[in-house]
Length: 137
Image (cartoon, rainbow, N blue to C red; front, side, top):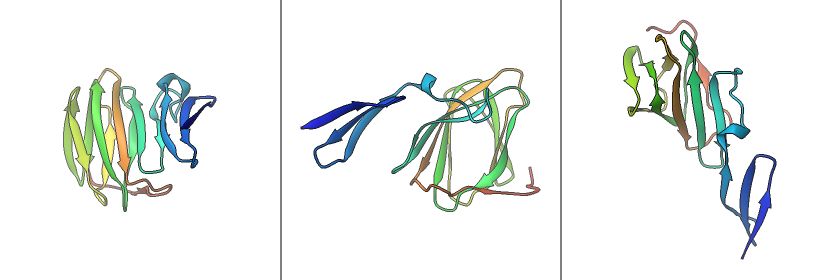
């Protein structure tokens, strides 16, 4: 038997043992980190992160890497350059890029339209982002 409870942004189903089995959330209930851009996390933990990410033309996200988490980006609309260990990869709608732990990556929208993509990070770690100063692009 499950207990259904509604939170301010999502529906969460809990078993009698208190385990979360599933939940539903709407993207419109979250905000982008930087107002109109950056990640918008729909889920953080316990096993992975899931975010909608948006960058306006000319915007970027600082170079960084993760010690444990691997990261995937799936492009929904638009075009973006994602630099991985110094190599530029130009991605557009329908493309997926997989980035392994310790690979330095940087995202930049050098194009004239917004880009929207999905980001997943796993396995979940509350803190696993190491910013890189003066990366090579």
